[in-house]
Length: 161
Image (tube, rainbow, N blue to C red; front, side, top):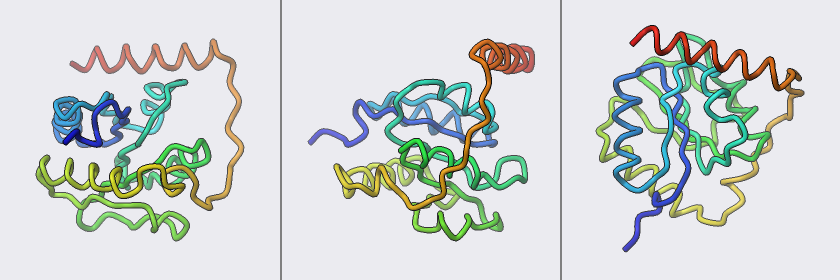
């Protein structure tokens, strides 16, 4: 039986770089085309670009700041979102509580099983694509400005390594 993850494009957004890297590697080993981990929503935007994404795994709190606004932006673009949360982290906004959740600490095997189960249960279902969340206008930037910001993030990330 083929895994639901094979060929799926998955964006991982988590400020815990160790867990994020392990999750990306586990997703790739399961056949997904995973990328990340993005540590911030800005880095996630840069990684996302114009890619088609089948699922975004989003930490509910990135460096102490709720990621609800980014989840709404992703949903407005018809990108399915699955939250990841730690004990004591703030709960998502009421409009987002229906989204699936992975509670940390979690083993990679359990996380993959949860993700695969969600994709399998909802294959072709509209819940993967539409959630009643308000569409917020995106800040328009020139392509050159976005490119410059993405280059700056990559330079900063490479300098930190």
